[in-house]
Amino acid sequence: MPSKDDILRSAEVTEGPDRAPHRSLFRAAGLSEEDIEQPLIGIANSWNEIVPGHIHLDELAKEVKEGVREAGGTPLEFNTIAVDDGIAMGHDGMRMSLPSREIIADSVELMASAHKLDGIVALASCDKIVPGMLLAIARLDIPAVVVTGGHMEAGEFDDEPVDLASVFEGVSKYREGEFSEEDLYQLECTACPGAGSCAGMFTANTMACVTETLGLSWTECATTGALDSRKRDIARKSGQRILDLVYNDIRPSEFLTEEAFENAVTVDLALGGSTNTMLHVPAIAQEAGIDLTLSDFEAIAEKTPHLAHMSPAGPWRMEHLRDDGGVPGVLSRLEDLLNTECPTVDGKTIQERIQDADVKGTVIQSREDPVHKGGGLAVLRGNIAPDGAVVKAAAVDENMRQFTGSARVFNSQQAALNAIDEGEINPGDVIVIRYEGPKGGPGMPEMLEPTAKVSGSPRLSGKVALITDGRFSGATRGAAIGHISPEAAAGGLIALVEEGDTVEIDIPNSRLHLDVPKSELAERAESWSPPEVDTVGVLERYAAMATSADKGGVLTVPEQDTPDIDLVESIDSQ
Image (cartoon, rainbow, N blue to C red; front, top):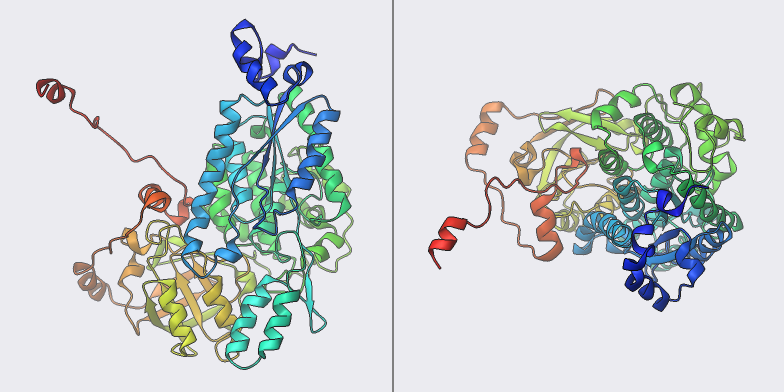
């Protein structure tokens, strides 16, 4: 075995006389001589007592740590934050969700770099936390394994499976008299029965499937439930495996290749995953040095069928996908579209994962009989979205895939919610919500509440569209088109839409068009100016540094051509 100095980053803080103070502090933290000499493995845990997808991660961490110890390493657990998108939904708290992704990534990077950890096992479940961990792992490029925490089981209401999306839509049904108060209460109490990420193919579970396809988590990790005993086994094996990766210097860059990202997008499209992946996956690719854009999603969608009719659009939840072969089952249906020699952290290639797959065909349909011939996500372009807009095509009613309607314009999500609640939205309308992008929001809040109110309304469902420079929850269904780029705050044409304008949506032909003459738009542009955004703290920083949605909403450092201080002037003034 190579010497510790040759392999381990931690030797910088544990070896030699000059590091006696460092070792002294490790001893104060409870480490023994043997602990200090072994590889130091960071257990990056997003456990907290707020998020259902994370409340069990402390127990999974115990399994990971035991696996690390069994393999001859020293586990050092630390925590990062986790925002629950469902609890943050529908109020100003949702502006904090996307910025939290960057804070998670930064915190993991800071802890691993400051303490010279040799490897990372990341535990995470929900919407921005898994992407945040992956951003850090790509950025650090030290040996790493991800343990996604697993899904909660579906609830049951009126003998039908239900999940969080069902509750959001239930609110609309209650307001319109379809549900009694008791109905809504019973749904509330049964839809989310316990620990785990919400049961449908929402953002958390989509990102778990993406992580498994990228090769950074164990085979079947994505579809093994939060409280399934097999998840504990995966956690322990992941802890054991990280030592092999460390000693053999196998880094995330060996998994995060262009071919692996193409595989991940293909699986995402086949599953009809969350539109949020079109923010997260390009951002992760960028950290890995891979140029992945919406154009790549478009190209892959042209040849990728939608194979699994998952909630929120369809009847299937994660437990059903698990029982039908999980991610390996999806891979097996797509074999000729994939780069099957890509490696994975458990030592298998994608081809070997395919060989072990057991597909029954209940949930994962055949290529000859797909849910839709095209991928479950689509990119739309046109005068209102020259840099692109995204839609979960798999969750759009057939009669809404081509739709022309009259614009109802709102400068915030709350204004649109008020109009929906007051019955001011009618069939044939296109709800336009703007100034909710990365800079304009700021924070690009999700909009499950307005989409759920439309989808849950018999009067409006399948008869109203919504377009926005904000984004949607993975639980959103219906003709909901988001990520319009450029956003309104950056001078995008969505800022010029007026009440009554005609908006044309054509998903089969990837088109989104505002039917207003150029001369009229030019006149409107003359009098337009961006509204002032009154923010402080993290949102102020995010608004100043965030890129547009088509570039992943990542943060960039503003260019600075000259120093802040003129040294000559400073000296002269003394």
